[in-house]
Image (cartoon, rainbow, N blue to C red; front, top):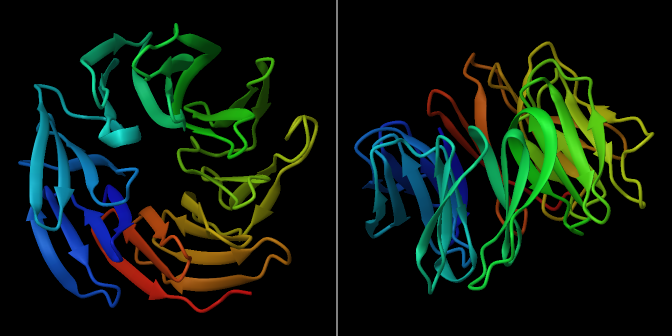
Length: 315
């Protein structure tokens, strides 16, 4: 499973067979939409929350709803990552080439310094692109400012920005996090990982960043001017299996943790209490999501298995 989201109260899963499944809250298969001729590799919910943008190994970018799929772009190379922009704009990458479709403007292409590992919207008019050698910040407004670069050697495989927009953090291929304080470009290195941390998720107040890549969830503190600089990480839910996915509850200090062996836990930050949600079955957890109110939770595995849970009030 490559993408998991919640749209109009339905759990939406994009699968390796090119289909997108729309399921009611009870987990019933409401509808299957044929979106791609091959595997769906990436996806992102549109900012208005009404549809799913998907990229596939058939070179297509689609906009998918329960009513069907609309082709937005076709090319020769598979789509590695996609991000929704304001007013139905979008950006996607193939190899080291970034394509930006502005809502009311031309489509532009940008050659990055090396392979693109991930990208994320950092403001209504800003995009952060992680690649070999660092992060490039791109203005996607109608009158764009020059690009800016945050350099650091190595391949960056994921990128995120803190909710208060003070820090940009990447996961690196070398098994670490690297961060920059945006105000002055001061950078920081956060290690202690077994594998590359590709899954990153911020707590509701933005004071913690959870990450995958170790045999437990690794949480870094980001409150204060210096964030994690000179401070130690907190860890939750250690197991023998590698953590492959993390996502915070949208309202409470509870983090969902998915493992390489298929297990899923909900862990509470204040006391480390853990609630098992899914038993291990040998297939790695690839995607997890809460709905906007935190009342339902879904997780999907590499083999395409999907688990949907209706939650009570954690308070």
